Amino acid sequence: LTEKVKSVANLPAITPDGRPIELVLNAGLSAGFEHSQKVGAVGIGLYRTEIPFMNRSCFPSEHEQTLWYKEVLAAFPTQAVTMRTLDVGGDKALPYFPISEDNPFLGWRGIRITLDHPEIFLLQIRAMIRANIGHNNLEIMLPMITSVTEVDDAVRLINQAYHELCTEFNERLTKPRVGIMLEVPGVIYQLKELAQRVDFFSVGSNDLTQYLLAVDRNNARVATIYDYYHPSVLRALNVIAQESTNYLVPLSLCGELASEPAGALLLLAMGYDKLSMNSHNVARVKWVIRHVEMQRAKVMLSHALTLSTAKQVHNYLNEQLEQLG
Ligand code: PEP
Ligand code: MG
Image 1 (cartoon, rainbow, N blue to C red):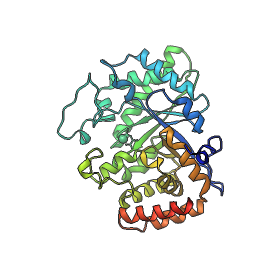
Image 2: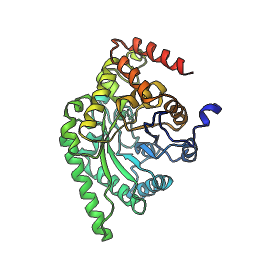
Image 3: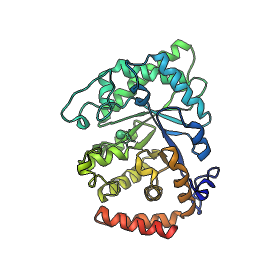
Image 4: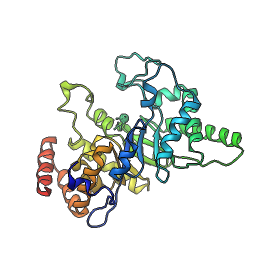
C-alpha cells in the first residue's frame, strides 16, 4: 500500500460532500482479520462458508461449524457479519459431495442444493444461530436465489431452526436478519416480491455478469466478453439500485466490481449502501471515495450509462480516474 492510501485507514469512508458508504470485507477463512481491522473495514459483507467446508474429507458437524462461526462473529463484535449459506456447485466442489453435470453453472448450485438437502441447510443454520448467542451480529444470506418460492422455503427452514434453538435454550434468542444475493438475472424482474420477504439484498456481480452476458466467468477463451462494465451489466446494477431504494431495502454489492475504484464510484453514485471486498482493496477504494464528490460520481455515472460498449465505458472511466491522480 502506498502511504497515501494507508493514510485513510482510520478515517471513515465518506465523500468530501458528505455521502457515507460502508466498506466491508469478503472473507472465507479467519486468517487476515487483524489486517482488515488495520485497513478500517467495518464488518463482513460476505463470509463464504463453503471455503472452510472445502479442505476436509467429510461434512463438518454442527458443533464444528458453531466453533468456526463463533470465531468470525467474535472478531467483529460491534459490526454485522453476513454469512452466506453453503454455495457449492458451479465451480466449487466438495471432495465428499461430488456432483457431475454437463452445465454446472446452470445446474445444481447454491440454494438449489441446500433446499434439496434441508438436513445440511438446517444444521448449518442451527450452527450459525448457536454461534450468534452472546454476539448478536449475525446476518444470513442466501446464494443463487431464482424464485420467491426458494426464499419462502429457506425462510421457513431458518424459522424452524430458530424456534428449535429458542426451545432448547428456553429463551428468546436474537433472530438474524435474512437477505438474498441478487446474481441470477431473472430476479431483477421480481425485486418487489423479493423485497417483501427479506431484510437486505446483496448483488453478486461476478455471477450476475456471467449469467446476464451468458459467459462462463472462468473460461479464458471468452474472458474479454466477461466484463462488469458492459453497458447491460451497468444498467442492470442501476435498476437494482433504483428499485431497492423504492422498496426501502438496504443494498450492497459483494462481487469483484466493488473493489475497483471506478466500479466503487459508479456503485456509490447509483446509491449502493455497502460495498464488500477483499481486505487488500479496502484502503484503495476508501481513498477514492474520500476524494470524489458524490456530485462528480453522479456525473460520471450518468455519462457512463449513455455509452454503448464496454470499451467506451473503460476508456471514459480511465480518463476520469487519471484526472484524479
Ligand atoms: C458473486 O457471484 O459475485 C459473489 C460475490 O459470489 P461468488 O463469487 O462466491 O460466487
Ligand atoms: Mg456468486
